[in-house]
Image (cartoon, rainbow, N blue to C red):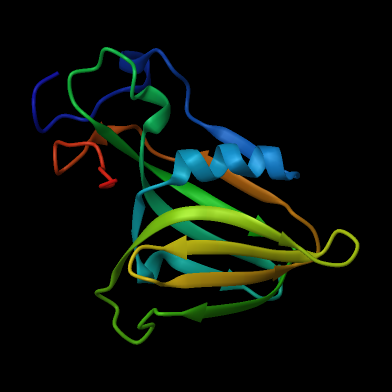
Length: 158
């Protein structure tokens, strides 16, 4: 694969991700695959009437980390949380349209019955807390993979 060209799903012998989480085990899988995804603050949207919160992420392809591909890849993915009743955030400057955020984890804090909060933890002490009727999260790749601009996999010092 030459630099500057998009990778193809066929190159990695994998199909685009299209996953759903209705329980904690499923959410852990989505959280691991979305770890280190980056997104401009402008690609975050709460559709109050539809009770939906969505992020358009530039996701690192962790699921392909052990493959024999030549370069690290990212792919644009939609992370969608359904049944959202309210949204709160901290540590995020929502007034600056140039802010780029990095997602670290997606977790669920159960409440009464099936309700609770989906917590999106961001690098730099930021967080987005979504009050939900029940856990209902999807992660779906929406573009072909592309060469990660940094040329490197994300790294977290011990």
